[in-house]
Length: 562
Image 1 (cartoon, rainbow, N blue to C red):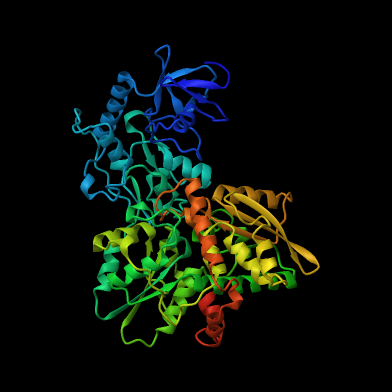
Image 2 (spheres, one colour; image 1 turned 30 degrees about the vertical axis):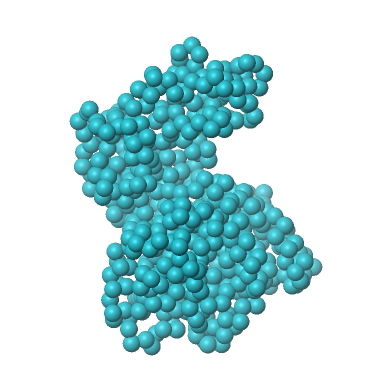
C-alpha cells in the first residue's frame, strides 16, 4: 500500500492530518490503552502501553511516532499482549491495592486496564512505601501511594494552567510527583482548579469528598438545609446515572435532591442574574470614570487566586462582584436569617475551587460563610447512587419559591463566553429578538481557548476577550502589558471550555465539553426570559432583601495576598 494510506492490522487506513499513529489507530476503531496520552497535552510517551509492532518486528510508541504512507503496523500481536500485561503488573507491584476503599474505585484507568487484560494476580512483591495523605487543600487530596508517574497532572498544571505547583522530583526508583521542597499542596502555588485530579488516571489526586458532612446536616432536625445548583451541573450528569452527556437534567436533579432530604432547592442562575446586573454596572462606571481597563470577571475563584499569586498588580481590575454562588448564598442566608432552625447553604458546583472560595475570610460575614458546603457534580452522583435512587426514572420537578425565576442569560454562565454574552445582552441598546440572535454570532461563542469580539456601544465599540485555561490568560496578560492588545472587558475561566469542563464534573474530552455547552444554549433558547434585567425576581430582591445591603451582600474586596 502506498500514497496516503498505511496498513493497520492488515487494514488500509487513510492518513489525513493525524499527528501520530495513535490517532490513526483510534480512527480505525481500535482503542489502544494509554495512561499518559491526552491530545490536549504534549506527548510524554512514558507508559508504553500504546506500543505497536512494525513489519520488521520493531516496537514503537504509537503516541510519539508520526504516520507514514506505506507503513505496516500491528496492534495486537502475542508479543504486544505479553508486553502490556507485564507493564501493568509492574505498575501494580508499585501501587496501593486498596481498590475497594479508593475514591476512584470503578472509575480508575489502572483498574479498568487490569480487568481488560485479565490480570488477576501480580507476581511481584508490592514495593510501594506508605506515604501520609496530603489533605491540606480544601479542594483536592493527594495520595502518592497510588501514583503511577504518568505525568498527566504535571503537564496539565504546567502546560494548560501555567501554575507548575507540582513536578517530578528525584530519579530512578526514588522518582515521585511533588510540590517544591515537598511542602503540602496548600502551601504551593496551587489555585485549586482541580484539573490535575481531572486527568489523573488513578486515585493519586482526587477531589476532596464532603458527602458525609452533607448527610450529617440533612439528618439534623434542627437544621434547615438549602441547596443551589450551578448552571453547568445540569448538563454534566452522564451515563453513570443513565443519562447522556449534555442532556439538561435539572428537573431530575431537583427531584433527587428532594428525595435525599434537602429542605429547599434553588438554581444558581438567580445569582448569575444578579452578577450580570452588578458587573455591567461596574463596567459602565469604570468607562464613565475613565478608570483603568479592562475589567476582568470574578466568577472563577481559581482565576482570582491566580491573579493574587501571579499578578497582584491587576487585582484592582478584577471585578468586585462576588461569584453567582456567593451572591446567591448571601441572599439565601439573609432571607432565612429569622428561621428558628440553623440555616446551612449547600452549593452543587462543577468546580473544585468553589470549595476553597466558600471558605475565604473575605466571603464570610461575622465569621460565618454564606455558603457552608460545596459539592461537586461527581459528589452529587455519588450521593444519588448511595441513596439508591434510579435517576433516569425520576419525573422532573421544579425549584422552590420564592427564588424560582431566572433567565437564559444566567444559564449560559456555565460555558466559556456565557458571562460576556449575558453582559452584552444587558448593555445592548437594541433589545429586539434580532439583536439577541446577532449577539450569539459575534464571536463570543465556541470552545476556543481565546476569543475576541467588538461590540457596538453607543457611538463606539467595546473590545472584549474571552479566555479559558490559565495559560491562555497568562499569554493575554503579557500581550496587554506589552501594548499589543487592548480590551475593555475580559472574561476568564480557569478550566478549558469554562465550567462545563470543570474538574468537579465527570471527565470529558473537548468534543464532549462542546456538547455540554450546546445543552446550556438550548436551555437558554427555551427560556422565556432572555435578559437578566427582565427577571422580575431580581427587581424584587433589590427592593427587598438587598435594600441598603447591595455592597455588603453582592460585592467583595479581595486583599490580593498570596
